[in-house]
Image (tube, rainbow, N blue to C red; front, side):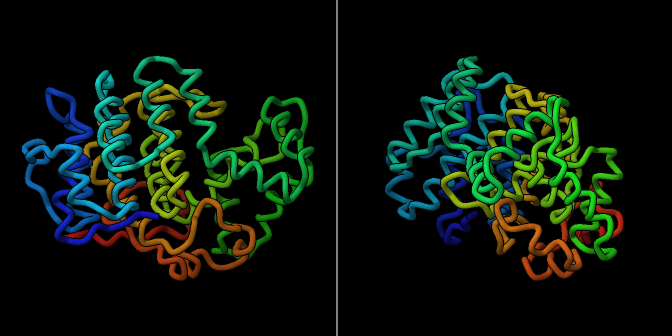
Length: 338
C-alpha cells in the first residue's frame, strides 16, 4: 500500500529517491518530471527542480527515515525511476543497493533490475518470476478451479484449445445490468475487438484480471495507459509484491525488455507523452486512495453492481488530468486542479 511520509520528512524522502535514481551526470528529463509530479500531486510538497536537490548519503537517509514502509517505498521509487532512463545507468544497481542496504530493505526485484541493466534478459525474467504477483494470481485460480483450466487457457492463447466454461462466463457479462462493472467490462472487450478469456487466441484469466482495473480506474490499454493502470494497482497492492507489476509493465512498455504475446513492446513511452510524469503521478495518487486491492480482489463478486457505485465505495476518485477512457458508457470524471 502506498504510504505518504510525514510532512516534515517529505523533502528528505524526495532527496533520497533523487540521490539513488540519478546517474553521475544527473537525472533524465523524465525522471525529474516524475519526481516533481509525485512530490506535488501525491505528497503535496512542490519541488521547483528535482535535479538541483542536494544529494543525501545512504547513511544520512537511514538516520532520517525510520519507518520500514517508507524506507521500502523509497528503494522501490529508485528502482522504478532507474527503468525510465535510456540507456540505463550501469552504476545504478550498485548505487541503489547501497541505499537499500543502509535502509535495511530487501527488495527482490533489485536483482532483476541488475540483470536488466547488464543485458541478461533470461535471468531478469527468472528473478522477476520469483517475486511476481502473477504467481499469486495463478495459485488462486488453481485453488478455485484446479490446474486443468489454467493449462487449457495456455492452450487457448496458442490457439490450440479453449476453456469453454470460462469463455461462456465472460460472454455472459453482456446480459449484466447496463452501467454495471461486468457489463462495462464486456463493452470494453467488445470495443477493443478482443477475444474473451477462454476463447482460442485469448489471454489467460490470470492476465485478464487487470482488465477489470482498466475499467475501474479509467485508464486505456495504450502503452501509457498500461503504465498508469499498473501504477494505480501497485499503489494499493500489498507491499511485498506491489513493485513486481510495475516492473512487469515498465519492462513491456518502457524498457522493451519483456516480450509477451498480444502486447508489442515499447521503449521510452514516458518521454513520448507530454505530461507523462504528471499522468504517472496522478495514477499513483488515485491508486493510493483506493481502499481495496484492486488487482487481487474478487471482481466477480461486484460485477453486477453499478460501476459508479463501486468507484465511490472503493474511493476511486476523479482524475486530475484528462485522457482517453476505456469505459465511455461510465466515464471517469476529471476534476482539473488549479
